Length: 442
Image (cartoon, rainbow, N blue to C red; front, side, top):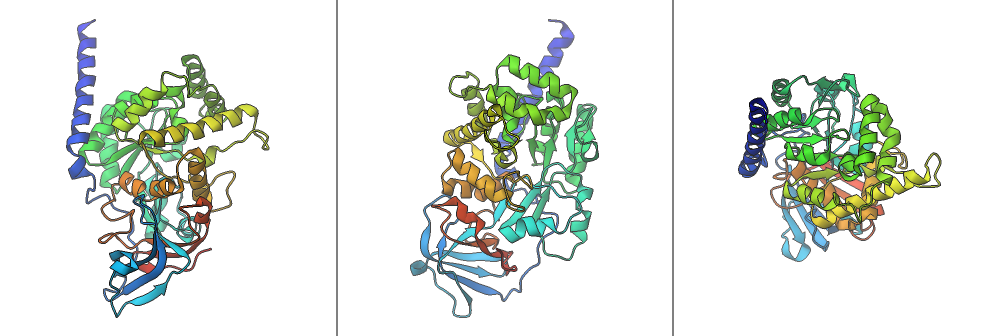
């Protein structure tokens, strides 16, 4: 091997070792970095505010069995007690809220919601339906100027900034076109300095530039998440990516080499072609026999990668209008792969992608929960995916994602029992954000 190639290989290896060292050594110090904040905090309740939610079914987001006849006590913006009524003392001065017949859950968290200077959809699509926190993966920070200026109470909103892509970008108005590794590093730093709490890379960014972005993000205690398809998922994970947006991002790492090559050649020449070819590619994958499945799943678990499948946006069933038999086979394989991720212990999270073809307006998140259960998650596992797992993905599990003392009082009350029937998640009746009741939901 020529001397220059040896040096280049050594440099790549050294970079990957450095990234791994930062990611693993810094896991305790970076897991809940203080600067990973929403762009606009919700209003604070009076310090004297004291509310006791009494008699509901407590599903605390940690995955355990529900607690019947529970009490949750909220003082100001914090949860101060939660548990069986027999074990929680209700302060005499607390305002009592009777929750008989309702399930009490943590506010839901959406890992993948897009908006553009819109102060209506974050409320009507999200807060109204129990989603108290969301992240926009990969839109420029300026897209949220209207939200920053709004007087309307919003969910907690986390941002990634413009996604990092290569030429020709699929969405020029939403991307930073990266030219080299140094440019990738500078862009990550600029995004974090401007308020990004994660970094999103897009499908054309080559692995060496992904590695540079991940190296810089690791220094800043920020997660890198990715929409792939032209870069194989295993290569991106080895480069330092710790979040995968869309189940379709795994396709080229799972399919046979010939099918992958055809997909990459076509989509490489025309980004829009992926919309038609995704389901075809997935229809070619044999998840039971492929030698690529287990190593990829093992890597996802080993590197603690968060998987945000956004299944609802890809839902196609054979026989439905506009869906072919191959589309149906492809989507069935997507469902099956997500189920395999859950089985091996991967961190599956919930992302709505704003809207979905088989969901009512504002209900994409609820449809995603239903599809996760169809893929093999239990209803309680799906709830945990949308609460605790997402809080961990956001680096905010110190204050969000579960109902327990010390956490922020983002709560929802649901009619029915979603631990038995995930469809009950559509029945959000009350929403509390930061210890303040919002308008009643439906």
